[in-house]
Length: 165
Length: 201
Image (cartoon, rainbow over all chains, first blue to last red; front, top):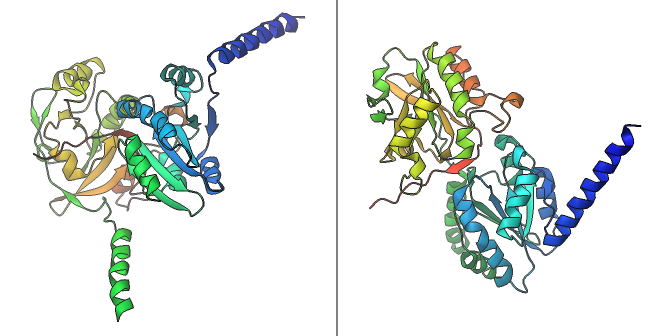
């Protein structure tokens, strides 16, 4: 008998959450692992992936994020897919990360990396990555070509790299 | 001959790009840095130490913040075994005012830090060690009058959840050296806040 009111409460909560998220057109931030992310990139057809590793705890990353919104516009026509991969702690996902992404009005797809040990996940992604953030990884899925840039980048720099193939 | 001319530099470039000197097994220089106690501290102040844990860290970085408690524990445990821990902040204090010397002093008092917390304002020590981020941990061992890096990388394998740590990389390196053995995992990949080294004027 105690089950029923509890169920109602959950339903109400669910409806509220859905209504809220519909109202702000927020994206649902998905979780990924190093394996799922590298798999997605490898079988990406002709997509050029621009993967930015960032975290809400990283001040230079936050300043850089709007550049990836700009990149989405600048790359107009090219098959470019921007993925903003957050290295935030588990305690930040999903609630605080969602709030942050909504507040920043980020348009590119945001993912949360569900990994804890950089010594395990970095070799699965790009082994030469020193582990500093921000870092930006460009992958031309069709040819397998890759570039990895540690440090802050801007949209123009990335579009120049993209147009040079 | 022509193809050889073309291939040789390409092969050389390939070789060079594949060759990266390991950060471990290199010798580092001693330093003399201002501690939050007001004293100048260098490794030479510890004549009886077998080696050191040197951790580049800072006040502002959340990834570094979660480790201060663990540094206290490591310092207590291994300090007694002849391997003191020293923490160094080499942050660019123009960008991160929270990393200034005054704030470092506050943190030392507030969090009862049991190890010297040193201010590397010139960033020279970070450059010498090749520290890239905070936190970035090193084990330096005394070997034939030199200070040789025996471990470089992460403190352990889980920043956010200390209770779920499986590999205590830094501690395991020290354990091995204390037992007279080679370090199993001399280098690990780690994540942290970029240690922005100022361009030389």
